[in-house]
Image (cartoon, rainbow, N blue to C red; front, side):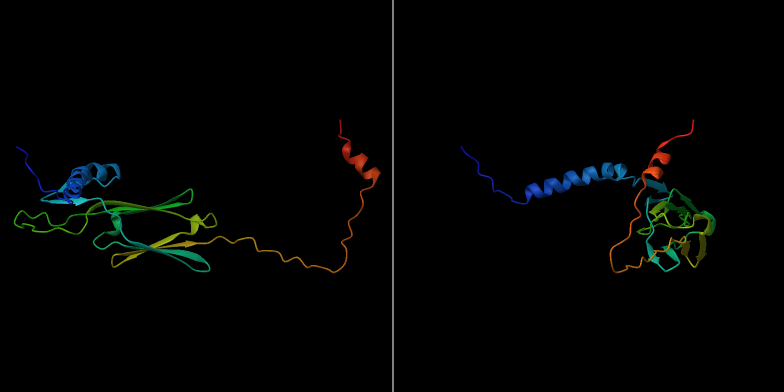
Length: 173
């Protein structure tokens, strides 16, 4: 006796989704998005949003860091790489509170930005106000382009004399 089964075209898709769900902790670990237990809430590593703008004299990096204290920030510049790192602490450790949802990210973060070579690392300034970090990276003085005037007519190239050539070829002993 033959049993007939109805074909479900979405079964393969659901199976693939289930496999991806099982693999996601491994994928998160491979990407460095480790989960951390903090009290009753689980926090995943996060990266704050930032903007980079350019002015005539400097680059301005603006980073949103609500809930982060200035003491928990570290900014370094090395080999053209500006690194901002710090930590946002989970502040609600009360055993009297029960969380039903935690969507904000907590824990350590690190953002690195490659800057152009023509910046003055020693002149970098940072300020932090109302959860917004601003880093001003001044540009170095660039060599100004030299304008070369074009004259009409053939260019006169001085001919090399045989005396000058022989005296330049000799090396002192």
